[in-house]
Image (tube, rainbow, N blue to C red; front, top):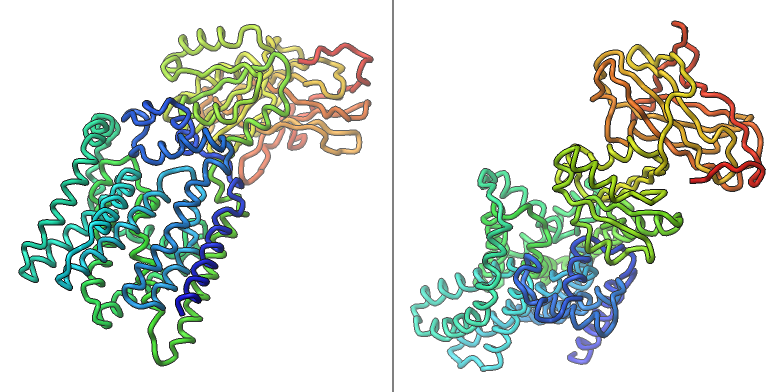
Amino acid sequence: MRYRTLLLLLCLLLLAFGLRTYRLDGQEIWGDEACSITIALFPFAQVFSGNMDTHPPLHHMLLWATVRVAGESPFAIRFPSVLAGMMVVPLMYRLGKLIRRETGILAAVFAAVSSFLIYYSQEARSYALSLAGSTGSMLTFWMALYYQQKRESVPLWLWGGYALSSLVAVYSHYYAFAVLLAEAIFVIGTIWKDRHLPRILPWLVVWGGMALCFLPWAIHHSHSLQGKASARFAEWNFAKFGEITARTLLAYGVGKTLPVGVQRWGWGIVGIALLGLGRTAAWGHRRMAVFLGLVLLGGLLFAWGINPLMPFFEERYLLVCAPSFLLLTAIGLSGWKRMGTIWAVVGISFIGVLNALSLWHYHNNPAFLKSQYGSVMADIAAQAQEGDLILLNNPLQASLFEYYRPEGMSYRFIPPDVLLTEEEAERFLQEATAGYQRAWLVDFGNPQEYDPAHRARAWLARHAYLGLRQDYLGATLSLFILETPSGIEHPVDILLGDEIRLRGYSIKPEAPSPGDFLLLTLYWEALHPISHSYTVFVHLLSQDGRLVAQIDTPPVGGAFPTSEWVPGEEIVDHYAIQLPPDLPPGPYQLNAGMYLWPAMTRLPVLKDGQVIGDFIPLGSLEILPRGTFSSGKP
């Protein structure tokens, strides 16, 4: 029996390893991971600095060694989390075995296949390490308590294991204190009930030693945490507690990567865990039931209690309490006599299918990407030319940029303080772009936090031609051709509905070649206040009506939507349409217009009071073979 159990555990470890290393580098490095890498690249003394991160330093110290041995690839920097996540499997088996062997095996199975645990075992952050520490803490805690209940002396190695695993947990993430707090409450309550007060003494000694080990970091880091705390005390309400509870329990059951409609099935797993809570007490393990319930409830109350002091709540913060949920789920499916096998098979299959589906979405559904910053930089590198400049709007992307930075390209970070006024923005951007032919603007995160008036984009849109605008997860990439615009060369008087007038336009070069940028300026005027934000389209069509080049974007590079136009004010709107390098020479038609997104409803075009269609014909262009005409490609 023992050898079969060891073989089964080995198979579960191999399964856990396979699930955690499968496409380990499939997700791009995201912001917090990039920060971890940046910290790990500093000298070791700085890694321990309290100003580096809001989290304790243990994971950064481990990563410091990793990058010097294995490098900085996504696989290498995430591999320590894989190992930490794997450690949870045997620890869960041993914890469940305290109740019965079958429960331990099921607990190990659920730890191996849990999509929530796998998700954070594939991330170069401290969550998997803290999970391993808290699981070890719960196991050694209960073993020490078991010795005391048998009135036997607790071995020194067990006290040492408890202290070490607990310190690993809290030196990885502060929320691990929720587990330690639950353990302390349980010990004090149990000893008080049993009237064996001397039993508290060794616990006080161990806790005191742990406190002394953590105290230097607590003092060192306290000032940094105070500077980053918020105060949203209105969130101390039952609704917020309900939200935290629901999000956390569903994540424990089915992870974070299921569509909402499917994720609701996770309440079935929550029900199994609640059933396990009742069965633990029914089996004569009332104290274990109280302890597991206390860890879960204590974690939820801990998160709710400090939530107003934190910028936001994420389910991953309570990953440290997941072992309690997984163990209760295993108890809910084990030890049944009548129909027990059928119930266990159905329950395990239900949990397995939902978690497998969650993992499929994690690996294959773009809706659950963590980052696309690497794609942004790869697209810049693929299209880069001599004379290009990267303008980085938002300093919070510094770590990501350092990781993915295209080699050999010039770049400048735009300081947020220069964007406070038009004058400062103009001064900085004029100096930064001087001598360059093109500028790649990378807006990262929420612009309301660093450039709410969109001054960087607005200045570039006024002084250059927008050639590309592409949205990515968490970032927007725009390419501006830095060439001095000309005035109106083709005056017109065309209306779009009864709201907007096109006063004229200019095009250069008049005879472009394949691969050139066609530089177009549109001169708009609002006839009266506009309630909608329209999107401008510029389309180049072949003689047979085939679309060969286009740009669709809100006017002025998205910095000046139509809903903000002032009646009578001229709006100068620049575009750079890149012609395909393999475009056949010949005549082409250039059209423009506006539509309402996402309905795609175009504004009617009127000339001399008559509707002439839903686009403005700007005229015919002759595309010449390359080399026939010097078009001055930007």
